[in-house]
Length: 152
Image 1 (cartoon, rainbow, N blue to C red):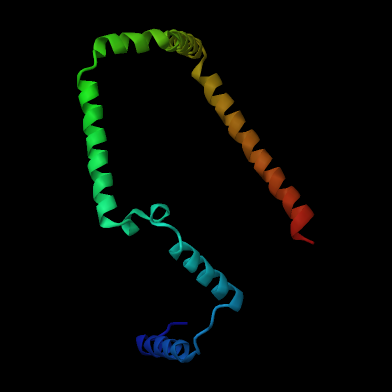
Image 2 (cartoon, helix red, strand yellow):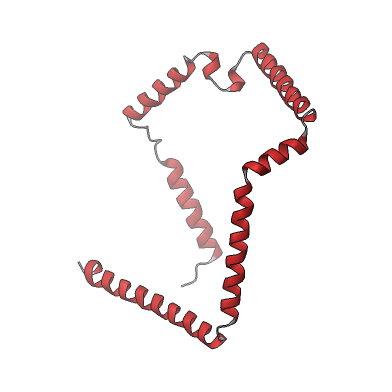
């Protein structure tokens, strides 16, 4: 059944008019009380517990200046740091990471050698068997679900 553009527009206007004519719904009384209580609780908080935008302007200015000074001190401290000595210290602390990387690289190389030795026919057959087993699992799961739950 095709709907003509005129009847479609009339239907749209009818629905809009019907919805506009509905009386506004009030929130449940308990919800209204909880919202108003939360708003008054938040308004009663001291300024340091409110959002940054509600802080006094002078305090915001002091905070921004102090933050900028702290950032500048941090950059100045890093500029005077002997990075070579620091990096060597960190490298000594994390020497186990490089040893672990060597073990992982050896394991990957060993796995690649083993996989290269297996015929592609066996690899594709194994992949097909795994896909077939998963399809069987999902099929049996679907059948069990329909048998146990859908018909009740």
